[in-house]
Length: 517
Image (cartoon, rainbow, N blue to C red; front, side, top):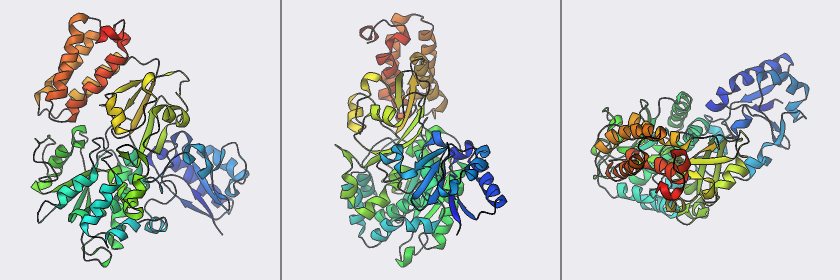
Protein backbone atom coordinates (compact mmCIF):
# COMPACT_ATOMS: atom_id res chain seq x y z
CA UNK A 1 0.00 0.00 0.00
CA UNK A 2 1.48 3.33 -1.09
CA UNK A 3 1.85 6.39 1.12
CA UNK A 4 0.14 9.56 -0.12
CA UNK A 5 2.25 12.71 0.13
CA UNK A 6 1.07 16.20 -0.82
CA UNK A 7 3.33 19.00 -2.11
CA UNK A 8 1.65 22.21 -3.35
CA UNK A 9 1.70 23.24 -7.01
CA UNK A 10 0.64 26.80 -6.11
CA UNK A 11 2.93 29.37 -7.75
CA UNK A 12 3.86 30.94 -4.39
CA UNK A 13 4.94 27.51 -3.12
CA UNK A 14 6.80 26.88 -6.38
CA UNK A 15 8.63 30.20 -6.01
CA UNK A 16 9.75 29.00 -2.56
CA UNK A 17 11.08 25.68 -3.87
CA UNK A 18 8.10 23.30 -3.93
CA UNK A 19 9.06 21.70 -7.27
CA UNK A 20 12.52 20.87 -5.94
CA UNK A 21 11.01 19.42 -2.76
CA UNK A 22 8.59 17.25 -4.76
CA UNK A 23 11.43 15.96 -6.94
CA UNK A 24 13.60 15.25 -3.88
CA UNK A 25 10.77 13.30 -2.19
CA UNK A 26 10.17 11.18 -5.30
CA UNK A 27 13.91 10.50 -5.66
CA UNK A 28 14.40 9.61 -1.98
CA UNK A 29 11.36 7.32 -1.95
CA UNK A 30 12.68 5.48 -5.01
CA UNK A 31 16.13 5.19 -3.44
CA UNK A 32 14.62 3.62 -0.30
CA UNK A 33 12.16 1.41 -2.24
CA UNK A 34 9.20 3.10 -0.61
CA UNK A 35 6.04 3.23 -2.70
CA UNK A 36 4.43 6.67 -2.59
CA UNK A 37 1.69 8.56 -4.40
CA UNK A 38 2.82 12.16 -4.81
CA UNK A 39 -0.07 14.60 -5.24
CA UNK A 40 0.48 18.24 -6.17
CA UNK A 41 -2.30 19.99 -4.26
CA UNK A 42 -3.23 23.64 -3.95
CA UNK A 43 -1.73 25.74 -1.17
CA UNK A 44 -3.38 25.92 2.25
CA UNK A 45 -2.56 29.63 2.18
CA UNK A 46 0.03 29.61 5.00
CA UNK A 47 2.84 31.07 2.94
CA UNK A 48 5.33 31.45 5.78
CA UNK A 49 5.27 27.63 6.02
CA UNK A 50 5.68 26.95 2.30
CA UNK A 51 6.70 24.57 0.92
CA UNK A 52 4.26 22.73 3.20
CA UNK A 53 4.44 18.96 2.85
CA UNK A 54 1.54 16.83 4.08
CA UNK A 55 1.42 13.07 4.64
CA UNK A 56 -1.82 11.08 4.81
CA UNK A 57 -1.94 8.98 8.01
CA UNK A 58 -4.68 7.06 9.81
CA UNK A 59 -5.14 10.05 12.14
CA UNK A 60 -5.40 12.51 9.24
CA UNK A 61 -2.98 14.58 7.21
CA UNK A 62 0.18 15.56 9.10
CA UNK A 63 2.00 18.74 8.05
CA UNK A 64 5.71 19.55 7.84
CA UNK A 65 7.09 22.93 6.89
CA UNK A 66 8.72 24.92 5.61
CA UNK A 67 10.46 22.01 3.88
CA UNK A 68 13.47 22.51 1.61
CA UNK A 69 15.12 19.94 -0.63
CA UNK A 70 17.95 19.44 1.85
CA UNK A 71 15.46 18.47 4.57
CA UNK A 72 13.95 15.54 2.66
CA UNK A 73 16.47 12.83 3.60
CA UNK A 74 16.13 13.75 7.27
CA UNK A 75 12.35 13.59 7.04
CA UNK A 76 12.55 10.03 5.70
CA UNK A 77 15.01 9.15 8.46
CA UNK A 78 12.45 10.45 10.98
CA UNK A 79 9.76 8.24 9.38
CA UNK A 80 7.69 11.25 8.37
CA UNK A 81 5.70 9.01 6.03
CA UNK A 82 4.09 7.62 9.18
CA UNK A 83 3.78 11.06 10.80
CA UNK A 84 7.08 10.73 12.67
CA UNK A 85 8.55 13.43 14.92
CA UNK A 86 10.84 16.01 13.28
CA UNK A 87 11.71 19.62 14.01
CA UNK A 88 9.62 20.62 10.95
CA UNK A 89 6.59 18.65 12.17
CA UNK A 90 3.52 20.84 12.71
CA UNK A 91 0.93 18.22 13.70
CA UNK A 92 -2.39 17.51 12.04
CA UNK A 93 -2.99 20.06 9.29
CA UNK A 94 -6.67 20.58 10.10
CA UNK A 95 -5.78 21.31 13.75
CA UNK A 96 -3.38 24.14 12.95
CA UNK A 97 -4.69 27.27 14.68
CA UNK A 98 -4.39 29.42 11.55
CA UNK A 99 -6.70 27.09 9.61
CA UNK A 100 -8.98 26.00 12.45
CA UNK A 101 -10.14 29.56 13.22
CA UNK A 102 -11.25 30.23 9.64
CA UNK A 103 -14.66 29.78 8.00
CA UNK A 104 -13.72 28.26 4.66
CA UNK A 105 -16.64 28.16 2.24
CA UNK A 106 -15.16 29.28 -1.08
CA UNK A 107 -11.77 27.81 -0.15
CA UNK A 108 -13.16 24.59 1.39
CA UNK A 109 -11.31 22.29 -1.05
CA UNK A 110 -8.18 24.33 -1.71
CA UNK A 111 -5.14 22.56 -0.32
CA UNK A 112 -7.00 19.26 0.08
CA UNK A 113 -7.29 18.07 -3.51
CA UNK A 114 -5.42 17.69 -6.77
CA UNK A 115 -6.71 20.88 -8.47
CA UNK A 116 -7.19 19.34 -11.92
CA UNK A 117 -8.60 16.00 -10.79
CA UNK A 118 -12.31 15.96 -11.64
CA UNK A 119 -12.75 12.86 -9.48
CA UNK A 120 -11.26 14.71 -6.49
CA UNK A 121 -13.64 17.60 -7.13
CA UNK A 122 -16.69 15.34 -7.36
CA UNK A 123 -15.66 13.40 -4.24
CA UNK A 124 -15.47 16.65 -2.26
CA UNK A 125 -18.97 18.06 -2.95
CA UNK A 126 -18.09 19.39 -6.41
CA UNK A 127 -20.84 20.01 -8.99
CA UNK A 128 -23.60 19.53 -6.41
CA UNK A 129 -24.59 23.18 -6.89
CA UNK A 130 -24.80 22.74 -10.67
CA UNK A 131 -26.80 19.54 -10.23
CA UNK A 132 -29.37 21.49 -8.19
CA UNK A 133 -29.34 24.43 -10.64
CA UNK A 134 -30.11 22.14 -13.59
CA UNK A 135 -33.40 21.25 -11.91
CA UNK A 136 -34.42 24.81 -11.02
CA UNK A 137 -36.15 27.56 -13.04
CA UNK A 138 -33.84 30.47 -13.89
CA UNK A 139 -35.68 32.78 -11.49
CA UNK A 140 -35.08 30.36 -8.60
CA UNK A 141 -31.32 30.24 -9.29
CA UNK A 142 -31.18 34.04 -9.29
CA UNK A 143 -33.33 34.13 -6.14
CA UNK A 144 -30.92 31.79 -4.30
CA UNK A 145 -28.01 34.09 -5.14
CA UNK A 146 -30.06 37.16 -4.18
CA UNK A 147 -31.19 35.59 -0.89
CA UNK A 148 -27.58 34.70 -0.02
CA UNK A 149 -26.67 38.39 0.12
CA UNK A 150 -23.61 37.77 -2.08
CA UNK A 151 -22.03 41.04 -3.21
CA UNK A 152 -19.27 41.62 -5.72
CA UNK A 153 -16.01 40.42 -4.19
CA UNK A 154 -13.92 42.31 -6.71
CA UNK A 155 -14.27 45.52 -4.74
CA UNK A 156 -17.46 47.26 -5.85
CA UNK A 157 -19.63 45.14 -3.50
CA UNK A 158 -22.64 45.44 -5.82
CA UNK A 159 -25.34 42.82 -5.04
CA UNK A 160 -24.72 39.89 -7.39
CA UNK A 161 -28.38 38.86 -7.53
CA UNK A 162 -29.47 42.27 -8.80
CA UNK A 163 -26.90 42.15 -11.60
CA UNK A 164 -27.96 38.62 -12.61
CA UNK A 165 -31.65 39.56 -12.47
CA UNK A 166 -31.06 42.49 -14.82
CA UNK A 167 -29.35 40.25 -17.38
CA UNK A 168 -32.06 37.59 -17.00
CA UNK A 169 -34.81 40.11 -17.73
CA UNK A 170 -33.06 41.79 -20.67
CA UNK A 171 -34.23 40.06 -23.88
CA UNK A 172 -31.44 39.04 -26.27
CA UNK A 173 -30.60 36.13 -28.55
CA UNK A 174 -27.08 36.05 -27.06
CA UNK A 175 -25.84 36.77 -23.52
CA UNK A 176 -22.40 36.42 -21.94
CA UNK A 177 -20.75 35.58 -18.62
CA UNK A 178 -17.37 37.22 -18.02
CA UNK A 179 -15.09 36.32 -15.14
CA UNK A 180 -12.79 39.22 -14.29
CA UNK A 181 -9.60 37.33 -13.39
CA UNK A 182 -7.31 40.30 -14.04
CA UNK A 183 -6.19 40.35 -10.39
CA UNK A 184 -3.90 43.37 -10.26
CA UNK A 185 -4.22 44.89 -6.79
CA UNK A 186 -1.09 44.95 -4.64
CA UNK A 187 -1.14 42.32 -1.93
CA UNK A 188 -3.91 40.24 -3.50
CA UNK A 189 -3.70 36.60 -4.53
CA UNK A 190 -7.05 34.96 -3.66
CA UNK A 191 -8.17 34.79 -7.32
CA UNK A 192 -4.91 33.15 -8.30
CA UNK A 193 -5.19 30.63 -5.46
CA UNK A 194 -8.70 29.63 -6.60
CA UNK A 195 -7.68 29.22 -10.23
CA UNK A 196 -4.53 27.28 -9.38
CA UNK A 197 -5.96 25.36 -6.42
CA UNK A 198 -9.60 24.65 -7.35
CA UNK A 199 -10.33 25.68 -10.97
CA UNK A 200 -13.50 23.57 -11.15
CA UNK A 201 -15.25 25.72 -8.54
CA UNK A 202 -14.88 28.73 -10.84
CA UNK A 203 -16.00 26.73 -13.89
CA UNK A 204 -19.03 25.46 -11.96
CA UNK A 205 -19.91 28.96 -10.73
CA UNK A 206 -19.75 30.39 -14.25
CA UNK A 207 -21.85 27.52 -15.61
CA UNK A 208 -24.51 28.16 -12.96
CA UNK A 209 -24.45 31.87 -13.85
CA UNK A 210 -24.95 30.97 -17.52
CA UNK A 211 -27.95 28.77 -16.69
CA UNK A 212 -29.39 31.47 -14.43
CA UNK A 213 -29.46 34.28 -17.01
CA UNK A 214 -29.62 32.34 -20.29
CA UNK A 215 -26.01 32.91 -21.36
CA UNK A 216 -24.38 30.19 -23.44
CA UNK A 217 -20.85 31.62 -23.69
CA UNK A 218 -18.39 32.51 -20.94
CA UNK A 219 -14.94 34.07 -20.92
CA UNK A 220 -12.31 34.07 -18.17
CA UNK A 221 -10.27 37.25 -18.67
CA UNK A 222 -6.99 36.18 -17.07
CA UNK A 223 -3.98 38.33 -16.39
CA UNK A 224 -1.03 37.24 -18.52
CA UNK A 225 1.23 37.09 -15.44
CA UNK A 226 -0.60 33.95 -14.20
CA UNK A 227 0.80 31.09 -16.34
CA UNK A 228 0.17 28.41 -13.69
CA UNK A 229 -3.46 29.51 -13.37
CA UNK A 230 -3.85 29.41 -17.14
CA UNK A 231 -2.51 25.86 -17.32
CA UNK A 232 -4.80 24.66 -14.50
CA UNK A 233 -7.85 26.34 -16.03
CA UNK A 234 -7.21 24.99 -19.52
CA UNK A 235 -6.75 21.46 -18.17
CA UNK A 236 -9.88 21.65 -16.00
CA UNK A 237 -11.98 23.15 -18.82
CA UNK A 238 -10.91 20.36 -21.18
CA UNK A 239 -11.83 17.69 -18.61
CA UNK A 240 -15.16 19.42 -17.88
CA UNK A 241 -16.01 19.29 -21.60
CA UNK A 242 -15.05 15.60 -21.79
CA UNK A 243 -17.25 14.76 -18.79
CA UNK A 244 -20.24 16.74 -20.07
CA UNK A 245 -20.08 19.56 -17.53
CA UNK A 246 -19.51 22.04 -20.37
CA UNK A 247 -20.78 21.99 -23.95
CA UNK A 248 -24.08 21.88 -25.82
CA UNK A 249 -25.80 19.37 -23.54
CA UNK A 250 -24.70 19.80 -19.91
CA UNK A 251 -25.26 16.48 -18.12
CA UNK A 252 -27.98 15.55 -20.60
CA UNK A 253 -30.10 18.59 -19.70
CA UNK A 254 -30.26 20.02 -23.20
CA UNK A 255 -28.79 23.26 -21.81
CA UNK A 256 -25.57 24.71 -23.21
CA UNK A 257 -22.61 26.61 -21.81
CA UNK A 258 -19.21 27.11 -23.39
CA UNK A 259 -16.12 28.56 -21.74
CA UNK A 260 -12.80 30.02 -22.91
CA UNK A 261 -9.77 31.60 -21.28
CA UNK A 262 -8.58 34.89 -22.77
CA UNK A 263 -5.36 36.61 -21.67
CA UNK A 264 -5.09 40.25 -20.72
CA UNK A 265 -1.95 42.13 -21.68
CA UNK A 266 -0.91 43.57 -18.33
CA UNK A 267 -3.01 46.76 -18.09
CA UNK A 268 -4.34 47.53 -14.60
CA UNK A 269 -7.19 49.54 -16.13
CA UNK A 270 -8.55 46.34 -17.73
CA UNK A 271 -9.64 45.26 -14.27
CA UNK A 272 -12.43 47.83 -14.75
CA UNK A 273 -15.33 45.94 -16.33
CA UNK A 274 -16.00 48.14 -19.35
CA UNK A 275 -12.32 48.47 -20.19
CA UNK A 276 -12.05 44.69 -19.87
CA UNK A 277 -14.88 44.24 -22.39
CA UNK A 278 -13.17 46.62 -24.83
CA UNK A 279 -10.04 44.48 -24.53
CA UNK A 280 -12.03 41.24 -25.04
CA UNK A 281 -13.46 42.75 -28.22
CA UNK A 282 -9.93 43.28 -29.51
CA UNK A 283 -9.77 47.01 -28.87
CA UNK A 284 -7.57 49.17 -26.67
CA UNK A 285 -8.63 48.94 -23.01
CA UNK A 286 -10.45 52.26 -22.57
CA UNK A 287 -13.21 52.86 -20.03
CA UNK A 288 -16.71 53.17 -21.50
CA UNK A 289 -19.25 55.76 -20.48
CA UNK A 290 -22.22 54.47 -18.45
CA UNK A 291 -25.09 54.08 -19.15
CA UNK A 292 -25.68 51.70 -20.76
CA UNK A 293 -24.77 49.23 -18.04
CA UNK A 294 -22.96 46.02 -19.07
CA UNK A 295 -25.93 44.02 -17.76
CA UNK A 296 -28.01 45.59 -20.56
CA UNK A 297 -25.41 46.30 -23.24
CA UNK A 298 -22.05 44.74 -22.48
CA UNK A 299 -19.76 42.50 -24.55
CA UNK A 300 -20.47 43.06 -28.26
CA UNK A 301 -23.50 45.11 -27.16
CA UNK A 302 -25.19 42.09 -25.53
CA UNK A 303 -26.41 41.64 -21.92
CA UNK A 304 -23.39 40.56 -19.89
CA UNK A 305 -22.74 39.39 -16.34
CA UNK A 306 -19.30 40.56 -15.21
CA UNK A 307 -18.21 39.13 -11.85
CA UNK A 308 -14.81 38.53 -10.33
CA UNK A 309 -13.32 35.12 -9.50
CA UNK A 310 -14.31 35.01 -5.81
CA UNK A 311 -17.88 36.12 -6.57
CA UNK A 312 -18.37 33.32 -9.10
CA UNK A 313 -16.48 30.76 -7.00
CA UNK A 314 -18.87 31.51 -4.11
CA UNK A 315 -21.92 30.51 -6.18
CA UNK A 316 -21.58 26.68 -6.07
CA UNK A 317 -21.84 26.47 -2.27
CA UNK A 318 -24.90 28.76 -2.38
CA UNK A 319 -26.68 26.51 -4.89
CA UNK A 320 -25.54 23.41 -2.98
CA UNK A 321 -26.51 24.45 0.55
CA UNK A 322 -28.96 27.27 -0.10
CA UNK A 323 -28.96 31.05 0.06
CA UNK A 324 -29.93 31.02 3.73
CA UNK A 325 -26.90 28.89 4.66
CA UNK A 326 -24.51 31.41 3.07
CA UNK A 327 -26.40 34.42 4.44
CA UNK A 328 -26.04 33.11 8.02
CA UNK A 329 -22.36 34.04 7.89
CA UNK A 330 -21.42 37.70 8.23
CA UNK A 331 -22.95 40.89 9.61
CA UNK A 332 -25.25 43.71 8.48
CA UNK A 333 -25.45 43.86 4.69
CA UNK A 334 -22.12 42.04 4.36
CA UNK A 335 -23.08 38.38 4.16
CA UNK A 336 -21.02 35.25 3.72
CA UNK A 337 -17.24 35.16 3.87
CA UNK A 338 -14.37 37.13 2.38
CA UNK A 339 -10.93 35.66 1.59
CA UNK A 340 -8.50 38.15 3.13
CA UNK A 341 -4.92 38.27 1.93
CA UNK A 342 -2.19 39.21 4.41
CA UNK A 343 0.91 40.73 2.87
CA UNK A 344 3.59 43.33 3.47
CA UNK A 345 5.45 43.62 6.76
CA UNK A 346 3.61 40.78 8.50
CA UNK A 347 5.01 37.69 10.22
CA UNK A 348 2.50 35.12 8.94
CA UNK A 349 1.58 36.07 5.39
CA UNK A 350 -1.19 34.13 3.73
CA UNK A 351 -4.87 33.74 3.02
CA UNK A 352 -7.56 33.85 5.70
CA UNK A 353 -11.21 33.23 4.81
CA UNK A 354 -13.48 34.68 7.48
CA UNK A 355 -17.12 35.63 7.85
CA UNK A 356 -17.61 39.41 7.75
CA UNK A 357 -17.45 40.96 11.21
CA UNK A 358 -13.96 40.07 12.45
CA UNK A 359 -11.75 43.09 13.12
CA UNK A 360 -8.63 44.21 11.33
CA UNK A 361 -6.73 43.87 14.63
CA UNK A 362 -7.72 40.18 14.93
CA UNK A 363 -6.54 39.62 11.37
CA UNK A 364 -3.21 41.37 11.87
CA UNK A 365 -2.29 39.85 15.23
CA UNK A 366 -4.30 36.64 15.80
CA UNK A 367 -3.63 35.42 12.27
CA UNK A 368 -0.75 37.57 11.03
CA UNK A 369 1.26 37.48 14.26
CA UNK A 370 2.18 41.16 14.07
CA UNK A 371 4.92 42.67 11.95
CA UNK A 372 7.73 40.59 10.49
CA UNK A 373 10.22 43.21 11.69
CA UNK A 374 8.96 43.05 15.28
CA UNK A 375 8.27 46.79 15.22
CA UNK A 376 4.81 48.31 15.77
CA UNK A 377 2.40 48.16 12.82
CA UNK A 378 1.83 51.80 11.98
CA UNK A 379 -0.43 51.65 8.93
CA UNK A 380 -2.36 49.12 6.91
CA UNK A 381 -3.60 49.58 3.36
CA UNK A 382 -6.77 47.59 2.75
CA UNK A 383 -8.30 47.15 -0.70
CA UNK A 384 -5.34 47.41 -3.05
CA UNK A 385 -3.36 50.43 -4.31
CA UNK A 386 -6.51 52.58 -4.31
CA UNK A 387 -7.46 51.68 -0.73
CA UNK A 388 -7.14 53.98 2.27
CA UNK A 389 -4.27 53.76 4.76
CA UNK A 390 -5.67 52.92 8.17
CA UNK A 391 -3.88 53.97 11.38
CA UNK A 392 -3.71 51.86 14.55
CA UNK A 393 -6.70 53.76 15.98
CA UNK A 394 -8.91 52.18 13.29
CA UNK A 395 -7.69 48.58 13.64
CA UNK A 396 -10.82 47.65 15.63
CA UNK A 397 -13.08 48.42 12.65
CA UNK A 398 -15.08 45.29 11.75
CA UNK A 399 -14.43 43.84 8.32
CA UNK A 400 -17.73 44.99 6.81
CA UNK A 401 -18.42 47.04 3.67
CA UNK A 402 -20.53 49.66 5.46
CA UNK A 403 -18.24 49.90 8.51
CA UNK A 404 -15.29 50.61 6.21
CA UNK A 405 -17.28 53.12 4.15
CA UNK A 406 -18.13 54.95 7.39
CA UNK A 407 -14.43 55.65 7.99
CA UNK A 408 -13.88 56.57 4.33
CA UNK A 409 -12.13 53.29 3.51
CA UNK A 410 -12.83 50.26 1.30
CA UNK A 411 -12.55 46.51 1.77
CA UNK A 412 -12.11 46.07 -1.96
CA UNK A 413 -10.72 42.71 -3.01
CA UNK A 414 -9.64 41.89 0.55
CA UNK A 415 -5.94 42.66 0.18
CA UNK A 416 -4.28 43.76 3.44
CA UNK A 417 -0.76 45.22 3.27
CA UNK A 418 0.92 46.09 6.59
CA UNK A 419 3.64 48.69 7.25
CA UNK A 420 5.69 49.14 10.41
CA UNK A 421 6.68 52.45 12.01
CA UNK A 422 9.58 53.03 9.60
CA UNK A 423 7.22 53.80 6.69
CA UNK A 424 7.12 57.33 5.24
CA UNK A 425 3.45 57.98 4.49
CA UNK A 426 4.16 61.02 2.31
CA UNK A 427 6.18 58.74 0.04
CA UNK A 428 3.27 56.28 0.01
CA UNK A 429 0.89 59.08 -1.00
CA UNK A 430 3.24 60.04 -3.81
CA UNK A 431 3.35 56.42 -4.97
CA UNK A 432 -0.46 56.38 -5.21
CA UNK A 433 -0.45 59.38 -7.53
CA UNK A 434 2.37 57.92 -9.60
CA UNK A 435 0.56 54.56 -9.85
CA UNK A 436 -2.55 56.30 -11.17
CA UNK A 437 -0.50 58.27 -13.70
CA UNK A 438 1.19 55.11 -15.01
CA UNK A 439 -1.98 53.01 -15.19
CA UNK A 440 -4.46 55.64 -16.43
CA UNK A 441 -6.09 54.78 -19.75
CA UNK A 442 -6.01 58.52 -20.54
CA UNK A 443 -9.66 58.86 -21.50
CA UNK A 444 -10.64 61.43 -18.87
CA UNK A 445 -8.74 64.59 -17.97
CA UNK A 446 -8.93 64.44 -14.15
CA UNK A 447 -7.22 61.05 -14.06
CA UNK A 448 -4.81 61.58 -16.96
CA UNK A 449 -3.59 65.06 -15.99
CA UNK A 450 -4.53 65.16 -12.30
CA UNK A 451 -2.48 62.15 -11.30
CA UNK A 452 0.63 63.48 -13.08
CA UNK A 453 0.22 66.90 -11.44
CA UNK A 454 -0.43 65.09 -8.15
CA UNK A 455 2.90 63.23 -8.29
CA UNK A 456 4.68 66.53 -9.03
CA UNK A 457 2.83 68.21 -6.18
CA UNK A 458 3.85 65.43 -3.78
CA UNK A 459 7.49 65.94 -4.81
CA UNK A 460 7.22 69.57 -3.70
CA UNK A 461 5.49 68.62 -0.44
CA UNK A 462 8.13 65.99 0.38
CA UNK A 463 10.76 68.71 -0.15
CA UNK A 464 8.63 71.04 2.08
CA UNK A 465 8.17 73.67 -0.64
CA UNK A 466 5.33 76.25 -0.36
CA UNK A 467 3.45 74.10 2.16
CA UNK A 468 0.75 76.70 2.85
CA UNK A 469 -0.14 76.63 -0.83
CA UNK A 470 0.56 73.01 -1.74
CA UNK A 471 -1.37 71.19 0.99
CA UNK A 472 -4.69 72.95 0.11
CA UNK A 473 -3.85 72.45 -3.57
CA UNK A 474 -3.37 68.70 -2.97
CA UNK A 475 -6.79 68.50 -1.32
CA UNK A 476 -8.38 70.45 -4.16
CA UNK A 477 -6.77 68.17 -6.74
CA UNK A 478 -8.02 65.08 -4.87
CA UNK A 479 -11.52 66.56 -4.87
CA UNK A 480 -11.35 66.95 -8.66
CA UNK A 481 -10.12 63.36 -9.10
CA UNK A 482 -12.78 62.02 -6.74
CA UNK A 483 -15.72 63.75 -8.40
CA UNK A 484 -14.60 64.14 -12.01
CA UNK A 485 -13.00 60.82 -12.98
CA UNK A 486 -14.76 58.44 -15.34
CA UNK A 487 -13.94 55.30 -13.36
CA UNK A 488 -12.63 54.15 -9.98
CA UNK A 489 -8.94 54.39 -10.93
CA UNK A 490 -8.95 58.17 -10.80
CA UNK A 491 -11.96 58.34 -8.50
CA UNK A 492 -10.31 56.32 -5.74
CA UNK A 493 -6.71 57.55 -5.93
CA UNK A 494 -7.64 60.25 -3.36
CA UNK A 495 -8.41 57.51 -0.79
CA UNK A 496 -4.77 56.54 -0.09
CA UNK A 497 -3.53 60.11 -0.57
CA UNK A 498 -5.99 61.84 1.75
CA UNK A 499 -5.95 59.07 4.37
CA UNK A 500 -2.16 59.35 4.55
CA UNK A 501 -2.46 63.13 4.89
CA UNK A 502 -5.27 63.01 7.46
CA UNK A 503 -3.89 60.27 9.70
CA UNK A 504 -0.15 60.85 9.38
CA UNK A 505 0.24 64.64 8.95
CA UNK A 506 3.68 64.62 10.58
CA UNK A 507 5.07 62.82 7.50
CA UNK A 508 3.89 65.75 5.39
CA UNK A 509 5.67 68.29 7.60
CA UNK A 510 2.48 69.25 9.43
CA UNK A 511 2.58 69.56 13.22
CA UNK A 512 -0.92 68.28 14.01
CA UNK A 513 -4.08 66.92 12.42
CA UNK A 514 -5.95 70.19 12.87
CA UNK A 515 -3.45 71.96 10.61
CA UNK A 516 -3.60 69.04 8.16
CA UNK A 517 -7.24 69.83 7.46
